[in-house]
Amino acid sequence: MFNIRHSFCYGETKKNMKKINFKKGFTLIELLVVVAIIGILASVVLASLNSARTKGSDAAIKAALSGARAQAELFYDTPQSYDAVCAASGTNVIGPMILNAAQKLATTAVVGLDIQPWVAGNTGATGNAVCHDIAGGWAAMVSLKSSTTDNWCVDSTGASKQTAGPLAANAVVCP
Image (cartoon, rainbow, N blue to C red; front, top):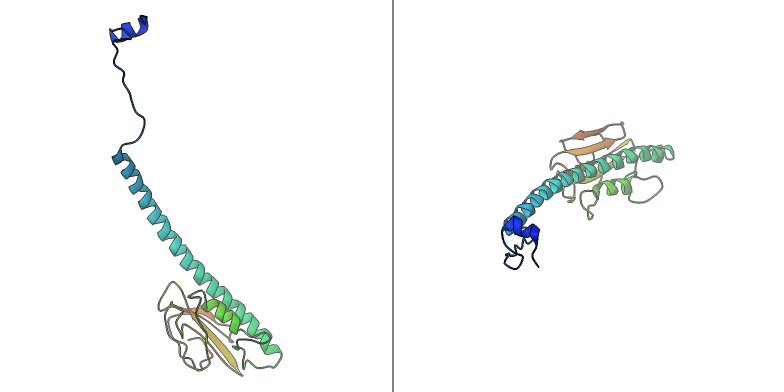
């Protein structure tokens, strides 16, 4: 059968017409460009998320130490002394709160007590979190995740601050 529409458009009959087969899809180059763009965007997003995660860890450390300061005052009310406020267990002690803050650096972190010297670092190593107490006062310091030199320190005088200085052995005031 003769198709008038095709014969006018192409100048030939349907039988003689060549079939044009346009395959739908993407070329390899187009796919590689799209994958490269997605990879670049993903790396930017992951870098931003890592920064946000670090800032979140710092905020959690600061919050835990702030809570420890309030808890230490509850401890002081009963014996009228801060001696043993850094203990790992007991009523109103702050040792578990300091440990919670230290575990934001590493899950295996420990808290050094009284004579433990301060060791700067954000890896959760021994000395990255310390709590010193005597009858007249206490101080606790934990490294911040975002820095290898900066720390967050709280003490019985009401100080709550970021510092680069160390908390000396037996010191009960933030530097």
